[in-house]
Amino acid sequence: MDAELRELYQEIILDHNKNPRNFGELDPHTHEAKGHNPLCGDRISITMNLKGDVIESLAFQGQGCAISTASASMMTEALTGKTVAEAQSLFEKFHTLVTTDDRTDEDVLGKLAILGGVRDYPSRVKCATLAWHAVDTAIKGDASVAKTE
Image (cartoon, rainbow, N blue to C red):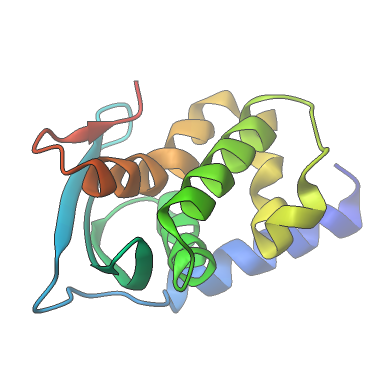
């Protein structure tokens, strides 16, 4: 990652960490899930409202590192208004971006693409994907705690 991109990456992470979007709990909500990253102790709770197969609203709360919080914040912005199928497709594209050198879908991911930099720090990939795993668990109606394993 070049210096300019690294600086942008840091700015976006810091902004979403200090000012997370959609932070809190939706009450009432139709779906929920919890997530835990045992590697660094991040814990997250996701609440969402699905109307049919559309994510009408999505919120998160919990405690985590800057990467985990920023990723959750950015994810809530990206997934609100999307269908379940679109959300699952974005999760797959995001996961591919942060775990491989495949940058094919960077344009589709928009602002989320900046998190592709975590692939250079393997221990941070789990931080970046925790909220995504929790949303996937919530959509499936799974009562287990989402993990990044």
